[in-house]
Image 1 (cartoon, rainbow, N blue to C red):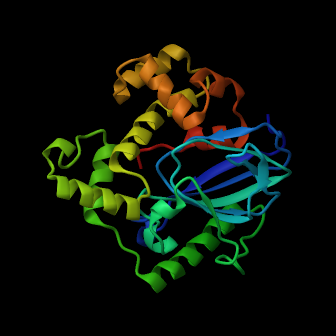
Image 2 (image 1 turned 60 degrees about the vertical axis):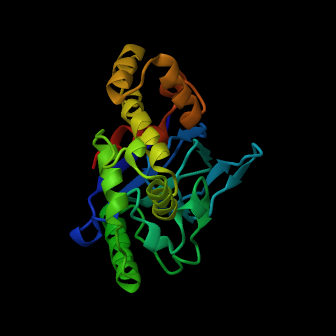
Image 3 (image 1 turned 120 degrees about the vertical axis):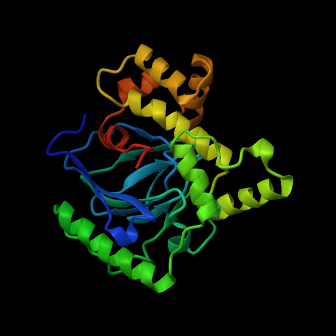
Length: 273
């Protein structure tokens, strides 16, 4: 368990950024535990700036390597496994699922399950240490400048699909009712502006509705099962498969072992805006 004055805070973006940015969050742990943390997909890409010691991230080869101090984390389809290497202080932008395309300047599919080095892009960016409000204000100013330079926009078709998925509503036009050409076009738009398919994004949102219950102190297995049924899972085995898919462990194992940043993000970040 992390000790010291650990804190996690979320801040709403200003109106001009709200179509693109879900929240801006800060986290600090002066003396974090070296425990391995599992970060689950939530359907939102993020821009992260590290003012403290870097995190070490596990690669596909099983080895841990230091993350760059500024990075863009694309959509995740599997858990991010990492651990702190020293005193931690982060400020990050959590974009809407389709909100980062024009910021990145690349199809979001190029960043799926990847952390892109943003050190050069954020050269000169220097948010004040130990000042969450000041850090957020600095990021807002920087993002507003980026938005004005590149005229960010939202694809209304993609946004409608995302809004329906988050509200647990049927898709605006169910897959079975779409012509094959229209479905392929939607898949291409999602690959470009979101980074994952509409179906996979819905699966992530469904998983998060259950995972958020697992992150709450005192929640037991029965509570997770009830939440799973409400979220649309048919039974416990189906839900367990998604925990393995998106977390790499069982719900019970995660709830028992996770602390610090992983739990702070999970307990406060929600699918619904």
